[in-house]
Length: 527
Image (cartoon, rainbow, N blue to C red):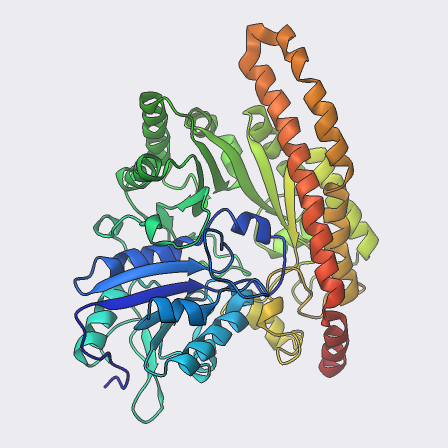
């Protein structure tokens, strides 16, 4: 039986918190424009229950009248006094925010011993459950929360047995960890409500996350997203978009599906519906999607995407080094990637390239490349492929991934007592790299590559490019073409200058930190 139940009330308050990043990082800027989709979906489901009202607070996006402390964090004591939550939800979708998640859990237990705390998200693989309970979490939802939450909350109201609720972990009355039977992945999304972003308090949301597909099927060693893709209907995705446009005047959208373009015919049909909708409302919408590079071989799909207002694509190139691509099971060569990305440019897409630097090779694979050669490979590829914006991260042995298991078996992961979860964001070396590269080399490399791409000089280029605007008068016969050319250069200059500001801020924060000393200790302990 559950040992945590709610006292009898006519209305219960549920609050979901997305924990803040541990420090200023490369995600901080965009986080101030958007929010995670998962917490909003969960809050929406709870808000539709008979005896419940729900809200979401994203600590990375605090804007409108947010009660904050001197350090910029949310004043949880003030919020709890103003709107006492009976159940607190904590979103563990990003491993780097887990220390903050536990800090919030402990704080709420301190100020309100009766509050029930529920946590969920990708971080909570089975071997991380105990640490959640040690921090004061009462229930951990394993896997998707949509159905589990609908069974858990009535059980908390009525004091029912939770041992049969699939996808749930908890402590029984004897403080023993109980892990219930896993829940099958959801396949019928049309029965789920549309995400209600009005439940997100204090946030300035201008970039809206939407989704149709869960799962991926690519089975990458370093990724936590596993399983065959499961598809919602095109009509449901359109309903979410039209709702946001008509109720929140939304214009910018990010389709969070891992691989846009799966279920090809339905994707094209979605693009056609989206095109017709924009024509009907006389408004141009702006979409960014994540897509596989090999979709460049499908001109019909690319044309449909462009017609629908999909202007930017985020592509996981991962590496321009063939040996690393082979280990990642990418089944593509560096030269082929350059040819394919040119097709995306030809269709007018803005290309955001995502890379992993220094991926660890498997035993038996011989590969010897020093740090300078690796950096040169990345820089040359980005220049040749003419990628508009880039993101370069280090490999992260995330909990529950094959990469974590492999590196653990090789005794290469640095002590988590020294390099804790807060460093698991892709900006820090977390394991012993392949020789002759060192951990310090890895850390320096991503800043060097990004520093070449994002520079102060782009502020000057912004001004110079604005002065070229009147020249477009000579291309009035093809104004759409010349505008796309002019806008692309202006946009890239703005983002690259903004990226320089972000990198400068991240470097300043890093210099204040104790990471270098911790890394030195972790290396000594490993050896």
